[in-house]
Image (cartoon, rainbow, N blue to C red):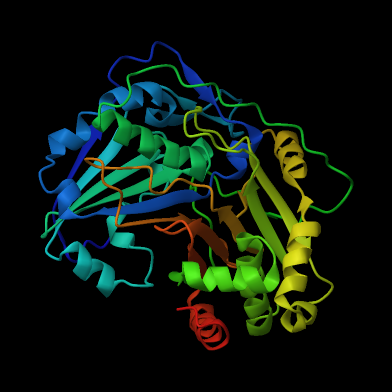
Length: 422
């Protein structure tokens, strides 16, 4: 990892406040394992008024009781016994090995950093990136938390979360719970058990929402033939209100339609993957991390030219009405493969991930909300992905687009000229 502009790097580990117990394991579901090549990342920027007087002790102390609740995320990957040389299904051994904490300092102010990387590659320096690889498969932490102090006294909290643990809602709920412990707003209690994978109908059809890879072993990193780049677009509350008034559709559908239309013109794209979450998240209904409520499906047009020439309302209706849920098919194929198959979910097709309901501003320091919260994914396949989340106002949207770098330039031009989105 390149640490340009960051100094005084320190790594430590925080473990649960109490011992989890002997031989306690967290079994990974078929759907969990389908996401094993993907990682959720988020950044939360706080001003000096929220963070200047907070010491590293103040930040780490409430992690201990918080991790007592979220003990599976402190475990390490293992494989069940199997006759050699056959691989075996992975699971998480809840051995309290802990969450890795990275401390860093930056000579810039928060304002200078945000101005310098506006629309850039998702603040990569502020999220520690260590994918799970074969040489340290059984030792790599599943969660990294990077705390970067800025010259002005501000702070960035950067999270890297292995998707096999749970979806973006689970990752966000963990961070928000940590904030509540910091504010003495909660006490250790048992989290609700995550729901089992709900049954999904699997009518006969080809599985097109994901890409099945040749076996990659214990290097849990999606292979790419193109260099991928991230760019952020901000759709303001005013812009979104105008779009909603014009097209009479849901925000996620309109935004997805705009970007699908652009990509159909740029490279020809007639099929997309759409990822949603089935749960109506209650802020007081905290569950163990899980991927159980993730929905993965496809929307397909006859040709890419149909999308390139269609009206945004037509494409929005196609996304709303022609979503074909393939979650059950993925579960079934993974089950038949004994949990050992290697899938790319995000980026198998151009993928749209609906994270509008993620509470990015639920993490607060000293009662103050982040200046900016952003969420994205790593391990995206060559077809790219689009992550849609709410902005600080709640009325606009922050859109993170991960694409081959030569496509980013064309997309930026197209959205600026046709939609005044930058």
